[in-house]
Length: 322
Image (spheres, helix red, strand yellow):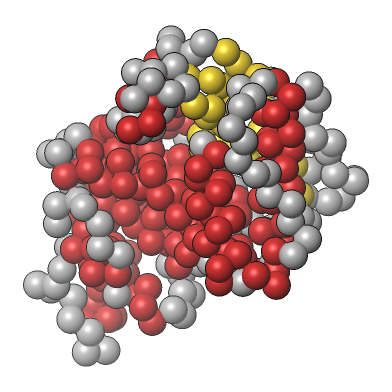
C-alpha cells in the first residue's frame, strides 16, 4: 500500500541512547523466547521493495517458531490452555515496514498465532462480509500443522490478508484490526503498570506505538491515545524513565492543531505532566505555563483535574491502576 510522504519519523525524535535501550530490551525478550524453540521456519526470500519514489506499507512474516509445551510467548504472557495441555503451537513473527527506495531501517514486529489471525478474520467477516469476498483465509487442519509447507502457505496467506486490510479504510479502522495489532501487548503492559513495574511496561508500549505509527495517521485517535499512555507510563514512577522527555516532547508536538474534541480532554493533563517533568529535569517551563494560562483565560479548568492516567482511563478503560 503506497503511503503519503511527509509523515513524522518517531525514530528521528529519539536520541541514540533511547533507541539503543529499546533495541536491547527487544533483543532480550526474543533471546528469552529462543531458548525454548524446537523448530524455526524462515521465509526463503524478502518481499520486493517498491518502485522508485514510492513508500509502501509492507507486512512480512520472515519466520515462525514452533514452541513446545511449557514455553511462553515473548510478550511475557502465560501459555494457553492448549499449550499447557501438551500441544505445540506456531508463533508467526509479523514484521511491519514502511519500505521506500531501501528497506525500512526501523521495522517493528509482533508475534501472533493462527488463532489471532482467525479471530481477526471472523470479526471482520461478521461486520463487513462484502469487503472480504476476495480473501482466501487458510482453514484449520487436523494434521500437518507443523510442516514447513503448511507454515509457508499460511504465512503467505496472512501477509496477503493484512495487505488487503490496510487498503480498505473501513477494515483498517475497525476495532478488530486495532485489537489484533496491540491487544495482547497493551493488556500485558497495563497489568505491569498495575504492578508498578513500569520499566517492563514501557518497552511494550513503545513497540505498540511504533507499530501503530506506521499504519495510522500521526494524529489519529489510537496513535495519540497510546502516545499519551506511554508518557504516563514513563512519568508515574518515582524516577522518570530515561525516554520520558523524548516521548513527552513528541506528544506535545502531535497535539498541536488537534481538533478531535474527545482527544482534547487529554491535553491539559498532558501539559501538567510535562510541566512536572520539566521541573524534575530543571528545564525552562515558561512555554508550558503560558499555554496553561491561555487556556485558563478561555474558561478551561487547568487545575484540580484528572491526571493523565485518569484521563486516558476515562477514554479507554484498562486494567492499570489510576
